[in-house]
Length: 132
Image (cartoon, rainbow, N blue to C red; front, top):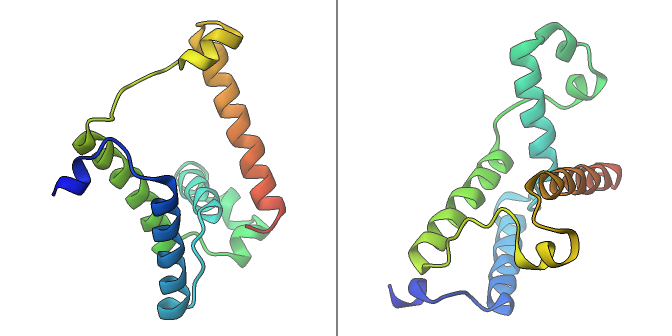
Protein backbone atom coordinates (compact mmCIF):
# COMPACT_ATOMS: atom_id res chain seq x y z
CA UNK A 1 0.00 0.00 0.00
CA UNK A 2 3.05 2.27 0.36
CA UNK A 3 3.30 3.02 -3.37
CA UNK A 4 -0.22 4.51 -3.29
CA UNK A 5 0.74 6.87 -0.46
CA UNK A 6 3.48 8.62 -2.46
CA UNK A 7 2.88 12.31 -3.05
CA UNK A 8 2.66 11.86 -6.81
CA UNK A 9 3.55 9.35 -9.46
CA UNK A 10 6.20 9.90 -12.06
CA UNK A 11 4.54 11.17 -15.24
CA UNK A 12 6.71 8.69 -17.16
CA UNK A 13 5.44 5.73 -15.12
CA UNK A 14 1.83 6.93 -15.43
CA UNK A 15 2.27 7.40 -19.19
CA UNK A 16 3.81 3.95 -19.57
CA UNK A 17 0.93 2.36 -17.63
CA UNK A 18 -1.61 4.25 -19.76
CA UNK A 19 0.15 3.00 -22.90
CA UNK A 20 0.03 -0.56 -21.55
CA UNK A 21 -3.68 -0.22 -20.83
CA UNK A 22 -4.22 1.12 -24.36
CA UNK A 23 -2.38 -1.86 -25.86
CA UNK A 24 -4.38 -4.31 -23.74
CA UNK A 25 -7.62 -2.56 -24.71
CA UNK A 26 -6.81 -2.92 -28.41
CA UNK A 27 -5.67 -6.55 -28.04
CA UNK A 28 -8.54 -7.72 -25.84
CA UNK A 29 -11.50 -5.58 -26.92
CA UNK A 30 -10.35 -4.18 -30.25
CA UNK A 31 -11.13 -0.67 -28.97
CA UNK A 32 -8.94 2.41 -28.56
CA UNK A 33 -9.16 4.49 -25.41
CA UNK A 34 -11.16 7.65 -25.94
CA UNK A 35 -13.28 10.14 -24.09
CA UNK A 36 -14.67 12.83 -26.39
CA UNK A 37 -17.52 10.67 -27.69
CA UNK A 38 -18.56 10.07 -24.10
CA UNK A 39 -19.16 13.77 -23.52
CA UNK A 40 -21.31 14.02 -26.65
CA UNK A 41 -23.32 10.98 -25.57
CA UNK A 42 -23.70 12.36 -22.03
CA UNK A 43 -25.02 15.61 -23.51
CA UNK A 44 -27.39 13.52 -25.62
CA UNK A 45 -28.64 11.72 -22.49
CA UNK A 46 -29.39 15.05 -20.82
CA UNK A 47 -31.00 16.42 -23.97
CA UNK A 48 -33.12 13.31 -24.35
CA UNK A 49 -34.39 13.78 -20.77
CA UNK A 50 -35.48 17.34 -21.59
CA UNK A 51 -36.53 17.14 -25.26
CA UNK A 52 -36.66 13.53 -26.48
CA UNK A 53 -38.30 14.43 -29.80
CA UNK A 54 -35.48 16.85 -30.70
CA UNK A 55 -32.76 14.29 -29.99
CA UNK A 56 -34.61 11.59 -31.96
CA UNK A 57 -34.35 13.78 -35.08
CA UNK A 58 -30.65 14.67 -34.80
CA UNK A 59 -28.65 12.96 -37.58
CA UNK A 60 -25.67 12.32 -35.28
CA UNK A 61 -27.78 10.49 -32.71
CA UNK A 62 -29.61 8.55 -35.40
CA UNK A 63 -26.25 7.29 -36.67
CA UNK A 64 -24.62 6.92 -33.23
CA UNK A 65 -26.96 5.64 -30.56
CA UNK A 66 -27.04 7.38 -27.18
CA UNK A 67 -25.91 4.76 -24.71
CA UNK A 68 -23.92 4.12 -21.58
CA UNK A 69 -21.01 2.05 -22.82
CA UNK A 70 -17.48 1.11 -21.84
CA UNK A 71 -16.16 4.58 -22.78
CA UNK A 72 -18.57 6.30 -20.42
CA UNK A 73 -17.60 3.87 -17.66
CA UNK A 74 -13.94 4.62 -18.42
CA UNK A 75 -14.48 8.37 -18.02
CA UNK A 76 -16.47 7.89 -14.81
CA UNK A 77 -13.74 5.55 -13.54
CA UNK A 78 -11.05 8.12 -14.32
CA UNK A 79 -12.87 10.79 -12.32
CA UNK A 80 -13.52 8.49 -9.36
CA UNK A 81 -10.02 7.00 -9.48
CA UNK A 82 -8.35 10.41 -9.64
CA UNK A 83 -10.39 11.62 -6.68
CA UNK A 84 -9.57 8.63 -4.47
CA UNK A 85 -5.96 8.58 -5.58
CA UNK A 86 -5.49 12.23 -4.62
CA UNK A 87 -7.24 11.67 -1.28
CA UNK A 88 -5.16 8.62 -0.39
CA UNK A 89 -1.87 10.23 -1.39
CA UNK A 90 -2.65 13.42 0.54
CA UNK A 91 -2.41 15.55 -2.64
CA UNK A 92 -6.09 16.56 -2.65
CA UNK A 93 -6.73 20.26 -2.26
CA UNK A 94 -9.34 22.54 -3.67
CA UNK A 95 -7.70 25.45 -5.47
CA UNK A 96 -10.31 27.40 -7.44
CA UNK A 97 -7.70 29.93 -8.59
CA UNK A 98 -4.13 28.52 -8.76
CA UNK A 99 -1.23 30.82 -7.82
CA UNK A 100 0.09 30.94 -11.41
CA UNK A 101 -3.32 32.14 -12.63
CA UNK A 102 -3.55 34.72 -9.82
CA UNK A 103 -0.14 36.10 -10.70
CA UNK A 104 -1.07 36.56 -14.36
CA UNK A 105 -4.81 37.33 -14.36
CA UNK A 106 -5.77 38.17 -10.77
CA UNK A 107 -7.67 36.32 -8.06
CA UNK A 108 -11.16 36.51 -9.63
CA UNK A 109 -12.94 33.15 -9.72
CA UNK A 110 -15.45 34.12 -12.43
CA UNK A 111 -12.73 34.85 -15.00
CA UNK A 112 -10.96 31.58 -14.11
CA UNK A 113 -14.14 29.52 -14.43
CA UNK A 114 -15.07 31.18 -17.72
CA UNK A 115 -11.59 30.55 -19.15
CA UNK A 116 -11.65 26.91 -18.00
CA UNK A 117 -15.10 26.34 -19.48
CA UNK A 118 -14.26 28.11 -22.75
CA UNK A 119 -10.95 26.22 -23.02
CA UNK A 120 -12.84 22.94 -22.53
CA UNK A 121 -15.30 23.90 -25.26
CA UNK A 122 -12.43 24.63 -27.65
CA UNK A 123 -10.67 21.36 -26.76
CA UNK A 124 -13.89 19.37 -27.22
CA UNK A 125 -14.63 21.09 -30.53
CA UNK A 126 -11.13 20.23 -31.76
CA UNK A 127 -11.46 16.61 -30.62
CA UNK A 128 -14.82 16.23 -32.35
CA UNK A 129 -13.54 17.99 -35.47
CA UNK A 130 -10.66 15.52 -35.61
CA UNK A 131 -13.11 12.64 -35.36
CA UNK A 132 -12.21 11.74 -31.78
